[in-house]
Length: 338
Image (tube, rainbow, N blue to C red):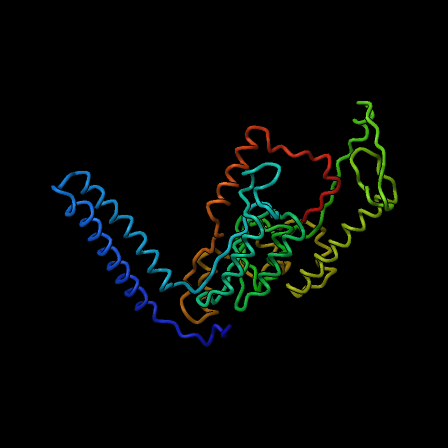
């Protein structure tokens, strides 16, 4: 792939004029086709035919406009949003629709499209997330690291835990004065239903190969060795988190540990070097303009979903509404989240 700095793009004014010409010509052709099919061709002019011609023209104008912007895009900054809890399947969780999160694989695909897009000279990650699953957060982080060009993380309401894991991969982190930043820590949880099981007359029988295969099973009491084993996993995840933030932000690991997974508002986060600058979205784009040496024009990269995917998401939510999508948490013995 050629270097973005070596690419020659048309002047933005020329591009806009060309887009207008393509859109206008396309609209006129569709309008002429609509008039021919629904007004001229039928015997006698009818109100219905005129209405169909008008509808065809309106739809044609929209399609021609989209075609013009696709053929001659004016943007040079890709913006990808991470919103809601970070999870592999997004809203395909125990409560569909809550958090309005996008599946992580879709977010990674958007970043990869931005990397492959010759027009996208910079990447802005718009973050509003409390965090979530560890590996999906790392998948997004790795995709950001692979982008060749300036990368800016922009925190809106919340950029915590897994969100900050992602932000630390960017060249710079911006946030609002009242943004919630940090929570550099890891939490693991398990459901202890052993007392309830005993009251209900239920007992737990173990059929497993390997000392820790059923560590954290909900229907039995956890022993000290299992507790130490599970805490060790959390500690390992935490050290990975520290290492990533320290490398990405050029901070002393001990200084990160001293935050003790607290969250900070934008100004205080800046004082601690957790972010670089407090500012608005417009100020972020002004800064990207300075970095690129040309006016920053951003476009939002959104996931590409076919009809089947949209249908599946809708059907999943409907099934949950009728009680068919309820998932038992008893079998989720140990849930680790950033």
